Image (cartoon, rainbow, N blue to C red; front, side):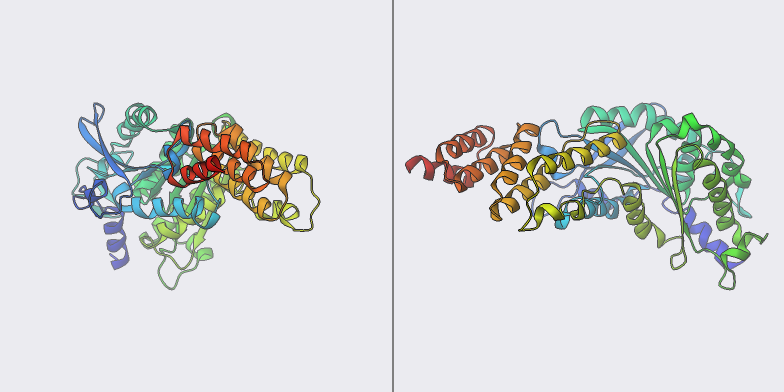
Length: 421
C-alpha cells in the first residue's frame, strides 16, 4: 500500500486513549495561567464517567450574561487552540469578529467507538485492531440527553450551539447533521473521514433536500490537500485509486451539499486548502470557519465612521437606530435577544466624550445603564461622564450606585474625592 495511506490512517485513528497530561488546566492555584476547568459527569448511556473541559469568558462573572456554546470533539487535542481563537476574535484588540462563547471540549475515552457510525472490520484497505467501532449513535445520544442538559444547568449558555470536529470528528459532525440537525445551529467539519464504511455519509445525503430540517443552519467544510504530489483537484475526482479515496469522498459530499443546501435555506461553504495536509489543517480552518459563520456578527468601524469623524454632525437618533438595527440582526441570527456589547458601547462613549460629543457620549453610557443594570462598570462610566461635564452631584450618585454593586478601588477614590469637594 502507498505509504501515504498508512500515515493518513494513523492520523485518522489518533488519540484512541485519553490524554493524562493535560489535567493541569484545572489547576487554580499558584503561578499557573488557568484557561479552563475540568468537570466530570457520569453517562448512563455510555456506562462510564466522562470528563469535559470548559472555558467560560471572563465577562461571565456578570449576572444574566449568556453565551453561545461550542462543542468541540477531540477536545484534548484542540481545546487550547480553539479557546485562544475565540478569545482573540471576540475581545482582543477590540475584535468583534465572533461573539464570546463558552467552549466545551470533549476528550476521548474510546475514539474509534464514539466517532464512527457503523461497525466495520477494515478501513481503507487496512484491518482494524479496534473492535468497538460503531458507537456514534450512542455517543450522540450522550451529547443530546446528558451532556447538553448538564452544561445548560451549570453554565450561562444561550440556545445557540456550534459543533466542531476534525477527521473522525468531522465524520461525526456530518453524521449528526444528517440525523439530528436540530441539535446544533452551526457545524464545522474539518477534513472529515467520509470514506468510512464505503462512503456511508454520501449515501445518506439525500436527507439534505428536506428544507424544514436545515433552514437557518450553517456548515463550513474544510478540505485538506491529501492527494499524491502529481495529482490535481480536477483530476482527483476521476481517479479510482485508494490513494485519493479520502479527498474524493469529501469532494463528492461537498458537491451534493452545495447543490442541495443552497436550495433549502442552509448556509454552506466548502474550502480547499492546497497548502495544508490532514494534520495541519484544523488551526487555520477553525479561524476561517469562525470568520465565515459569524460574518453577520461584527459591528464594523465602517458603520461608525460618520460618527467618529471629529467634524461629523450625525445625531444621536441615527446612532441609536444603527446600533439597534445591527443587534436586531444578530438576535435574529441567534434566535434570542442579544444586547449591544457593554465593552464596545462603553469604549464608544469614552471616545465621543474625548471628542466633546457629549450627546453621543451620553446615549452610549445611558444605553449600557439600561441594558446592564447589574454592572458596576456602567455606573462608574456614567459617573465619569457627569464629572467631565461638571455635574458632580449626579456623578457622585453614579459612583455610589457602582460601589453598591462592587467595591472597586478606583471608583471608591473618585467617590471620596467628589464627596470632599
